[in-house]
Length: 149
Image (cartoon, rainbow, N blue to C red; front, side, top):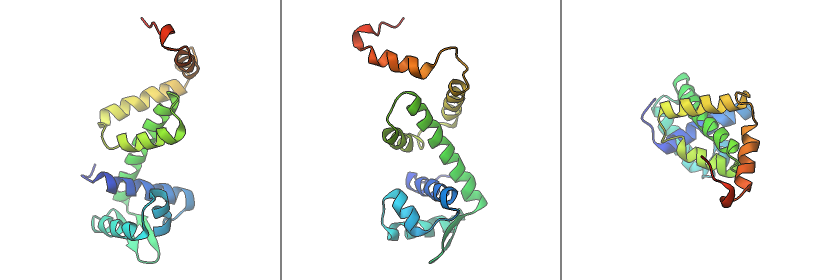
């Protein structure tokens, strides 16, 4: 993957998410998702355009180039994988989303790949017990009853 800042990666992911939702991405849409000013978005659009990751047209918005889309899809995959894991662990949605955003930039490809396989395995019914339900019961039992061997 490209050597991008976390901020640039967040913008690419936000652009992709907006495009997937609306079919296009404008400055105000991305600003709303990232909770930043439109001028900050325009500045990053210009930087990403110079890197050939997006095509920015003033007053029209931005589209991802093939390279930009490939990078954005990797970032989204990482985010979605981590968020799914956190949700399986019972982490509230907003916290799972925020933590996934922090961690998506830091973990190795190997770790993300194994986490994704594990989450897919659990979701596929690969274990004979509902692991999410069993874990929730384990957590509710309290510290005195967590004698795990």
